[in-house]
Length: 428
Image (cartoon, rainbow, N blue to C red; front, side, top):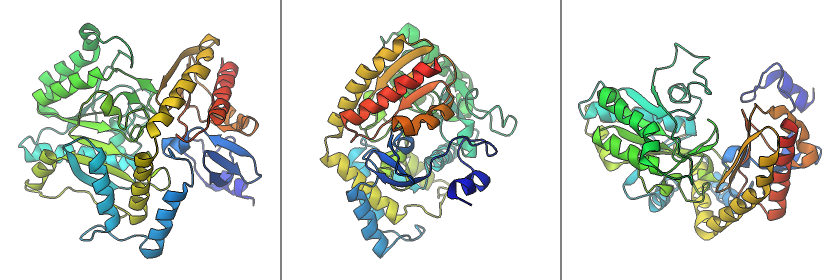
């Protein structure tokens, strides 16, 4: 049985019908922005392999750091033990994060980082004498992962609530901020979301542990970009009602939106921050949940005393050294200029798609380019075309989008935008 035949018969892929998985490509090697199939066909990874490979694949500095660590200590439990790799990564994160975010819990995936953040919020509220605060608020259009509690704060319409209705915890969903990024902020329009949040906190605040959301950019929930000023209003309301604020920067952290973190557009610091994906430059899985000192101290001084979570591969040394090497790249390369160049080119080359029939919107923010269609886009069409276009795209819902590695060249990026526009033309 060939590898592809075995795969089709036995392996499950994400968000794919196991009985009819559609087109599948066997990748034997990666190199920079390129995915290389077993038959030698090369495709540009316009997805950064689900948004994580910001420096390109197989970056020599990150690979070298991992190989050196592999020769000495691939893994050791983090319970009762520590190691230089975790300490060094912790130091580097504190150096780049806003002042106040300095208590770091490492885990092994973004979804788990969300679970940890939600646990932190509930344990903190219990420690503060608010044992009834076990509910969460969020905004529609969000996505926070596929694990159980994380699913409960994903969009109830476009997420998986419908399928698991009755099994998931019921949370509070607010209107999505209606003023888009770059739009004109007005207090009247802002009431669409902030007014609803204010009303919820006034009537139900004594039951809500935290407000969780993706700052500025909603990723897998719809690739929607909203005005940063909304976050400042949300921060003030949460403070007024003793509700924690959790930011999910798993998709946006480390430069994707042209700021190091999306929250930097607003100048707002959350009580708990979730990071992942690009944390290791896409070379190995790692995530972090970072809390402020008051949150950590509240939990530490409570009756429980300990945060009730402990992944087996927590602070894996291979992942931690990859994280340090990735942050080295951000410190030494002019990533901001790279992202700004990508943004200009995306805006210029995707702009003509606005005139295509069936196109609802074209938008760009940092190294994110989106063509939103009026109807759903079949990802199988893009998958079948990938060998011909030399571009790997994975559309979802109504969105044809790219999040390329920051190192992509102008010529390579033009191939990406051409493939996106062509796909939009065919979809329309």
